[in-house]
Image (tube, rainbow, N blue to C red; front, side, top):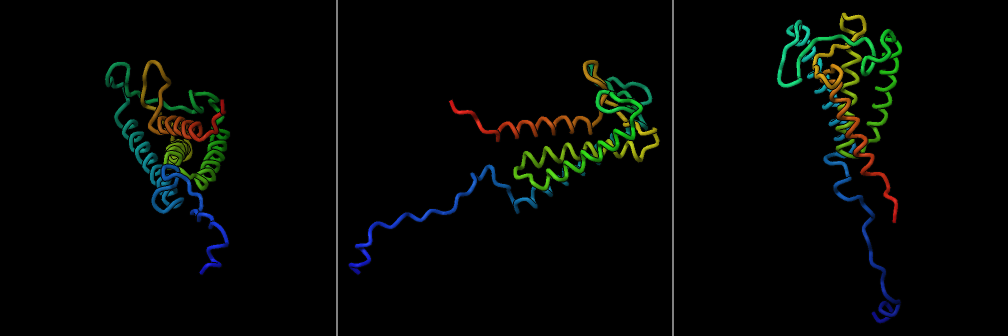
Length: 180
């Protein structure tokens, strides 16, 4: 027994380093985050397509809601803010590339806010692509929410904007801070 004691102090055994609980994926890890992304994307598509169908059926004339908000049916053959009208094939091609990039990024997503952000942007992009490809409006997207201070938009557009802001916020939070 004495020979064991004379060997010197024993180094403390530490568990392997783990990320703080807040940054670890909840549930079953990445599979759970992928399900969040897919579920949210499907919910955005369903909500956007349902509201667009209602807009086509009910908003043939502008409907005042409150303040400067009106429901006013328009068709946007261009990209965001009606830019690039007449370039539907290019817009669809770029949209398909964007969807592929989002799917690739979603596979590496490790945080819940990131998974939500990707789900919002992916759902919005897919729903607007569905308008261009499957609705009989010559490749135009249905927009129906009008304010005087912003171009007419739809649920998919709002989800894309919120998702991009959330992606920027989560990226900014995770960016290394300069010391000083």
